[in-house]
Length: 324
Image 1 (cartoon, one colour):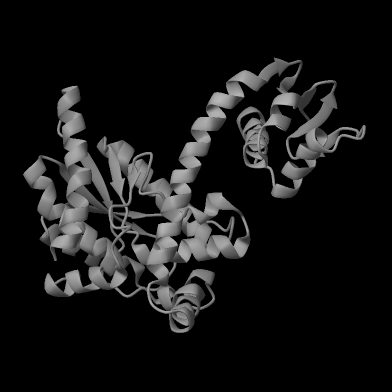
Image 2 (image 1 turned 120 degrees about the horizontal axis):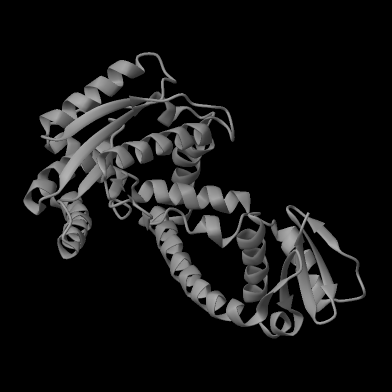
């Protein structure tokens, strides 16, 4: 199945080229391996391509310890990785409870992968998310109503985390494993409908395909890609705008009311959120953002607004943000 290798190869080649240009040692990558078809196909493709490019690849299996027999599953995944020619290791983690079981497991997994990458001096962590995962992520973001940020889905690259298979369907990774003689692990959590993502996978997407026709997953992935492009453009515009309209104030930061009013709502509200995030480390809800924007667009002498992490008041021709 050349498709998966074709998706992995450019990422490894870019790492090798960057390392060569800097005169550094041969690059190292971590492959996140659960033992499922997606990550197993990614590991196999990496094992095939990495030696040709002079890249060292290490498979890291994170054992969350959440299911009976998890140690055996992790050991089997490590054995398959070693059979493929990869260095491999198992990392056992403790999963907390913050944010629910899925979020807690993800946080523990990413922390373990980051630690493994640091220990190995790895310049990238390869993750096996597919186009199907992307479609599910976009639908879940749409259901939460959390705006363009969540509808962008997962980025192909975020820091050193790289997702080479975001354009590949889950069926393709399963076929790759079958053709390569690999035996994927079927995680029981992937069919446990207590989890919202499983309900989206097992019920919502099939229903949309049945009612609206095929191609829904691809359409959702295209939507995510287009929103990421739009966001990147917005970020450039905001970086250019914010330099001219923001100044330091006593115990905080101030923004020009006239400049905010002159910009369209999308930029005005993004500037407000960026000021709160960068200066005070808080993420404003849409309700709070719109209330602050009303100090610009619907000024009637309102008093200060108390929002998470800061207080915002209009003082003459400026909005002043101060810590609380």
